Image (cartoon, rainbow, N blue to C red; front, top):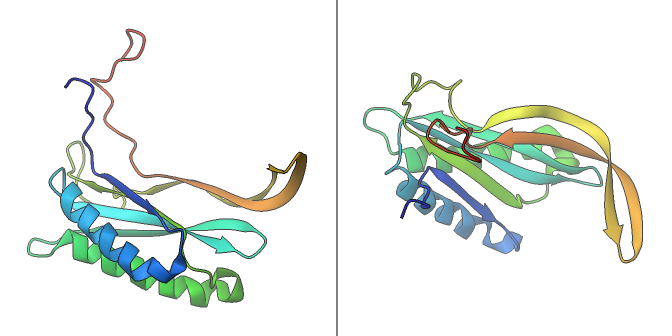
Length: 164
């Protein structure tokens, strides 16, 4: 169908920390499937809670070798970076990850380099007022805000309103 989009995006929301290891294996399977789209490099951003300060993103990226398995490399890098973040953030970063989002790629317009590997950090971490609703009341809290782009896309052939 002309409305089917195929790319190397993958992601998972972890609702129960007990299943973290199963979630990582599921991510590895997702990466293995998306490798059909591109297997030269890939990565993931893992969001972990900062106690009382929102979330922080931990970026894990790898460039595949000639005889290596990208799904294993990404899996191992996510696991290693998550463990390191517990040491880096101490008590604040000790919570289990709650969200993973990533992308594998085949370098079509640039070299397969670490710098070109997704996800890219769009905005650095900074504290901002964030409003949320608790019941019928709006509450403001100062929370960490940062954003990552898992796929900036090649939108040359994508048309919106007659414009590419």
